[in-house]
Image 1 (cartoon, rainbow, N blue to C red):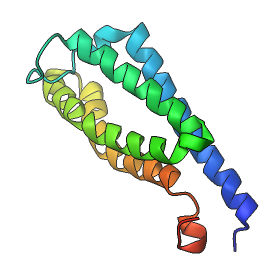
Image 2: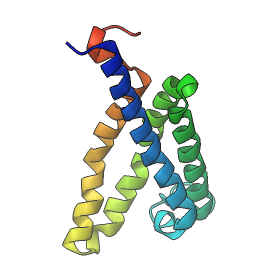
Image 3: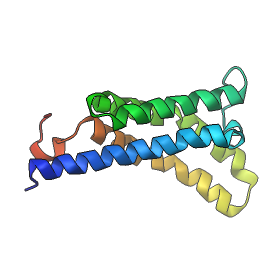
Image 4: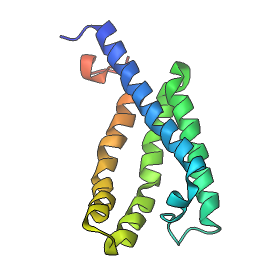
Length: 137
């Protein structure tokens, strides 16, 4: 049986890891926006750069919410929603990269199923302790 303190430490590590991932993505959106501009679905109105910056800001805000314990639950749910929301961009990337090298195609298509564990990770952060007691804390 896992003790509550061990579960809390594990939950904190999961949250900080998720915050780090989201924070890194936010910084990359600002530093290397062209990479992200190219995968913005064409169906979205406006300029791709606007969507790149908006999604980077959203990732940064969610990272902060996940890192800060009083807002962690909301941040976890927001992270799950964000991962679902960016899925069309990942599909767009996979379709656009269909004529690239086999390695690049593998990366693009491989990102799609990775959304599932990311969403589950975010939900775990939003609902810590469920695996220990079976109930919400």
